[in-house]
Image 1 (cartoon, rainbow, N blue to C red):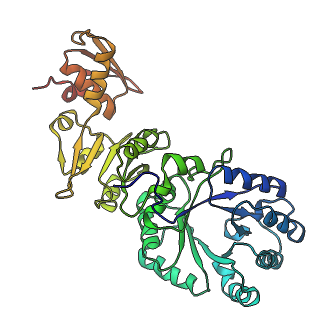
Image 2: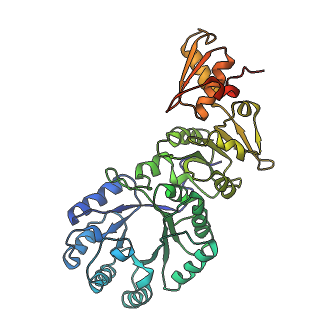
Image 3: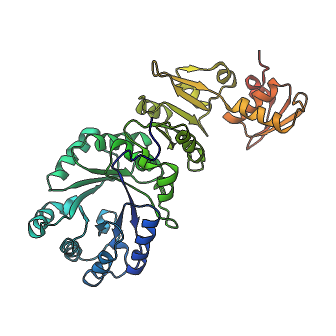
Length: 405
């Protein structure tokens, strides 16, 4: 259990700022503070015609929060295309001016960090970052990479990947929780969203959240980080629930379920899982930290195959929308709550009028459609189903329309 309102972890929330002018950048720093950010990442490479000697001090002198100074070249996923010497001189200047954090690419970090630590002996912390393209490395490969990055003299490590499957994020969580120094690690893109949302559970140094009006694909907003997911209440004991679906960005589940978990004083969080492969997903996220899932399109029928046991109602319907991991043995049990929830809601709306004998028209013939057809037929309704391409014959859903024994 967690006590609402008590800080549960040391993970900070960082807003990446990408203003095209110094004035816009300074304005966004103030906005990010109001929205709840703990520190700010300043992307100098996004500023048009940036002149370090005239403009960097203006940014640092007007900071409302600690700043991470980042000047990313195009060869490492940034926008800067100018002279490399000039870019590094700008970062040297940031150290001279006392920036809180400076981000260096692994390729250039080693000699620069040693030089700056000797020269300035300031409180500036140095982040060494590595952007990985292609397949996410294995646990062992990530550990070796972390050792190489640490050897540069880094104070904080940053690893960014672009996963092709949500199961690869488990390697990021392993890196964060096993590394012996502060780590920032996440995946970009929609499949990588949980790397930001669950970062505090695994002990990440910081997680990112975008400011209002500047959404970034695969990154939650500061509002959602602070209010929907309540990062400050997560810890290593937090249980993770979520919707297994593809796509998943449409889901309102976290908005509905997370306040209920907090109201019940339960140390849990509900997140969206963008899943491509059910077998790999359930195999990867198989521990007691993941005690239950809701299931959405297009998996309500297919997921039955991956349950160790299926409740009789779900088995009769041929679809499950809820999966619980049984605490005593870890087995996955599939249930269907769509059927009774939908049918009883319709009956309540009809205020006592019986469904029996009425024509029940369904638009869609997926897992939810099967559940509603089953429920309506069990009440004696006549069923007509429209699929996306055709009116589905009765025989196609014969099993779903059999009366309850």
